[in-house]
Every structure is written in structure tokens, then in C-alpha cells.
Length: 147
Image (tube, rainbow, N blue to C red):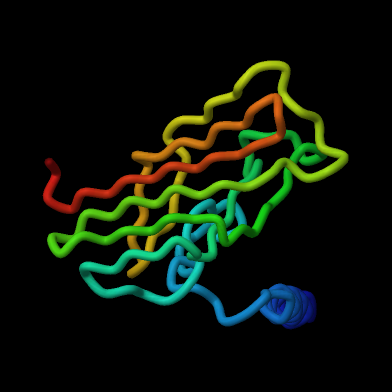
């Protein structure tokens, strides 16, 4: 059957095209099964005791929970990332709803979003808030000690 090699070639081409369209090296979190739906940190792993106020972060309406016409991704560097010596991670990112996208009439809070963090870590102890003034705030917490 000749369709199998053609199908494999089409999948390979689509994968290579998607990888070529990335805006830099793939983050370690991209190994998760749904990288296009992620919010949170994008970058290299960081050491324990690390703090920065300009981490690359992605926020926005992505994934199956939003109609396709309303989906968008916002890359921001207005982000505070802290990793304590014991491995507790806190990420807070701020962005703006893109021009042309509808603003909510009142604050929309999406709890339990999948948030990617340094070192291939992820958490659902996270929420995104979309405000009527056009602001987006993503807050993510990870405590590997379960406290």
C-alpha cells in the first residue's frame, strides 16, 4: 500500500515545519504532549535559589477550553520567577490582551491551567486572570515537598 509512506512523509513535513517556526530552541517543557496549549515559563533550566524579574513567559487563551477564533498567545518578559533553595517555584507573569480580541465584561479567572516551569516541571496549581482593562495575570506555584 503506497498511502502509508505518503502519510508518514506528510506528518514528518508538518513536524519539521512546526519546529522551524519556533522562535528559538525548543524549551524542555515542549516535550509534554500538548506544547501549543502551554502557558508559563519558556527557557532554560535554572538553579535553586534563582530569582529574576524578566523571565520569558507565555500567557493567553489557548487550547480546547477556548473557541478557535478567541485563541491567542502573548509572549511577555514582565514575569517574576523565583526558585527557592528547597525547590519551591513561583511564577507570576503579566501581559495584555492583544488588540482586536474581545475584553471580558468582568474578570475571568481560569483555575487549574497547565503551567510549565523550569526543569521540565509543570503544575496545575495555577490560574490566569483576564480583566476588563485588558490585563492578563498568570500565577503558578509548585512545591515539590507537598507542603
